Amino acid sequence: MAAISLRGKVFDKIREDILKGRYKKGDELVECTIGKELGVSRTPVREAIRQLELEGLVQLIPNKGAFVTGISSKDVMDMYQIRAKLEGLCAAMAAENITKEQLEEMEEAVYLSDFHADKGNYEQVCQQDGRFHQLLYQASGSRILAHTLSDFHEYLQRVRMASVKFRMRARPSNSEHKTILEAIRTKDTKRAEEAAYLHIRNTMENLKNFDMEKVLREEIK
Image (cartoon, rainbow, N blue to C red; front, top):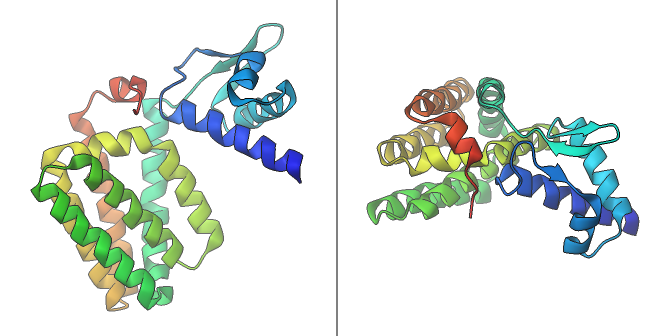
């Protein structure tokens, strides 16, 4: 179990560094260097890199090494299209399964988003946006769906941050959260599904305001 836990931690750390932009597209992942940095042997690093290859974030080239492929702008749009459908399903399921405590937490996330937007604290707005969606995933009652959407959320974090920090999008985005939340509160599954789907589609439209390749090159501090 210890070996599996260690491999998982190494995998999570390397993946996080790729998704946050610390490792750029084309960078080589050197096992011994990463091992020294993380204080582990080369074995869990090697295993983590192989797993990252299966996810498509790394390419292993025989006799050369492991190189970061990262995420392309097409990958981003593909994930948003898939996410729109799945998030709609998630909201519909949440309308049926949400608990009183989860509903209150989502209400708090919406309130705090408006509070921080008023003060221009867009880092905090972004945090509350992420919190709202994670709570939505949990409220669906589906472990599988929550895991899948959480993975998409992680993959898209640089793009999400750019979108939410865009001042003209922050308030409309939270207004859409309120619509989703109201549908869930009244257990209107159809309206919840439509509102969540539209929310992600609107986010996709907002991405046209950005140089996607530039956003994907930037590192999240």
